[in-house]
Image (cartoon, helix red, strand yellow):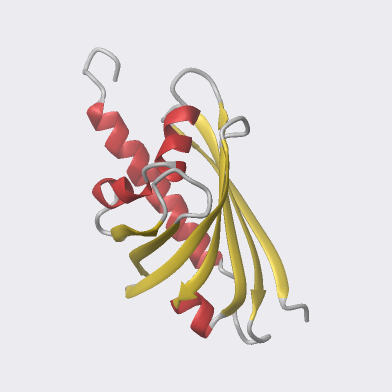
Amino acid sequence: MTLFGKMEAEVEVKVSAETFHDIFSCRPHHISNMSPAKMQNVDLHEGEWGKPGSVICWRYVHDGVAKTAKEVIEAIDDEKLSTTFKVIEGDMITTEYKSFKAIVQATPKGEGSCLAHWTFEYEKLNENVPDPQTLLEFWIHCLKDIEDHHLTQLPTAQA
C-alpha cells in the first residue's frame, strides 16, 4: 500500500471565480465569518495577507474535534485563480501526515458562479492513516457556507 496520495473534488458555487479566489488567496481570515460552525478563526503568523510565503494558522472543527493547521501560502496564481497551501504544523502533521498540500482553484462558470476545485496531495505517516475524505467533505461544506454568505449579501434585485 502506498503512503502517497492525491484526492480531488469539484463543486459549483454561486460566487464569482474572482471573489472566490480573493477569499482564499487574500482574505482567508474572513472564512470564519462565513462558516463559523466549522472555522473558528484564521490568524496571520508571518508575512502579509495575500502574499506567497506568508504563514497562517487555521483553527477549525473537523469531525467534531477542534483542530489547528499552520500553513505556508506556497503560491498564489492570479491568472489561474489558484492558491496553494502547505501544512507545516498542527494536528494533521503530528498525527496523520508526513506532508500535506492543498490547492484550491476557481474556474469561471457563467455569471456570478464558478467551479471550485480542491486538490489534496499528501504522504501518510503510516498505512493505517485513512485518506483525507472527511477533510475534503469538510471543505466542500465550507464552500457551501461561503456561497450562502455571499448570496445573503446580494441586493434582493440580484438574488
